[in-house]
Image (cartoon, rainbow, N blue to C red):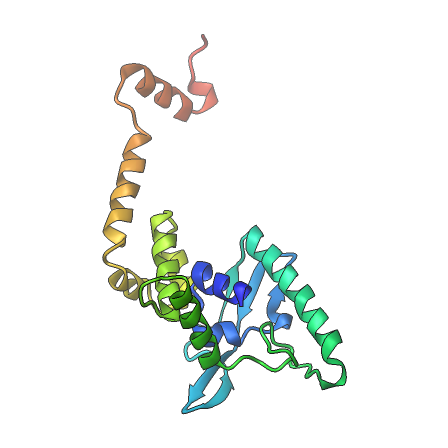
Amino acid sequence: MFALYRLIALRGLRRGEGTGLRWKDIDLEAGSAGVHWQITQLGWETIQSKPKTEAGDRVIALDTDTVAVLRAHRRAQTAERLAAGEAWVDSGFVFTDEIGQPLHPQHVSDHFHRLAYETGLPPVRLHDLRHGAASLMLAAGVDLKVVQETLGHVSSTFTRDTYTSVYPEVARAATESTAALIDATPANLCHARLTTLPKSDVPAS
């Protein structure tokens, strides 16, 4: 489950999107994952379908460590396939049980809740990892539009309004970073003026 939880915690996948990932949509060389399917529940029964919105059908970037984790996960899955023999179901999903069948979304949530309890964490839902991913991206200074597209939100307004507790801090940090580019000392102002002039206009030293 580690690779799945990492994707949810860092890339903000929904539970159904994570369980619905397929290897054919993962490009480990390019460091990207296509979120083109999801597994949702109707009662206890599961349904495989496309994301509900056009924004939900997306390609997300993967960091180097996550790519390494997915490579290790694929090796472990290959070992499980060999161990299962003829019982293996070649479903093509990234996250499967010991015989290759896609994971049931509720089993994933139950497993996460058990881990949280065993490690002494306060009550936390699996979906809270998605919110955490958004907060981490915003706190890291990732552009709001990029966060919106990564999460699969329809609009950046929705993203901003959902994470109002984080976004003002990010906006202030961006303001300070921008202001820090300009130092009011005469020497630096002169240097800035000279470096922005065309070469033909720069006086010879």
